[in-house]
Image (cartoon, each protein chain N blue to C red):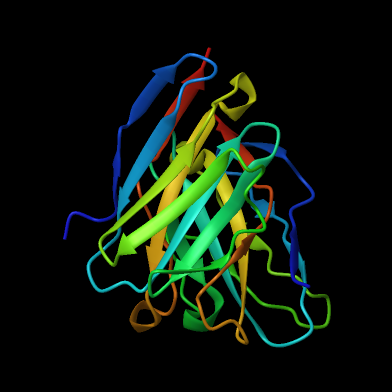
Length: 111
Length: 114
């Protein structure tokens, strides 16, 4: 079975502070991991995926297979980063593109 | 492409009424997903289709919920009869292997059952 755990439902930081949104997963094979973001009154959209190893809007996420984690980090949070963030896992054995989503973390960046 | 299209955007109905939500996936995408989002339970996968065939409907909460995908460009999620606890935002998403299985979400339908 595949499972994604986001232990923090709510996270609040001040503008300019570092932020880390935690994501842990369980999956017996090689997973593909994603972070999706949902800004207020907007649709969910992909923020980044681990295979591309890119930085989007200053966010990065490293897949740590030893710790089965895929934490999302940004060194200096901005107010516009306030949103709901979902970590998602897709098992590479899956042939239909199904992803398992975590419960989400609501990030609030205070001025 | 306009992205994933959902209708209606908002639906207010009374308990016991039938509700039908509609989704048009991105052209060329072969997988389609229906999700429900609530404050209490986050984002729940209800059902997903691959090449118009339902693959996994284990997330459908009850027999009151049903989903169809008669062709590659259209899907419906029906609730009959609706109940107040069905109030939520319902998202449709589509994906394709050609886009590394990134899921493209629609704007959602906000359902309120009174």
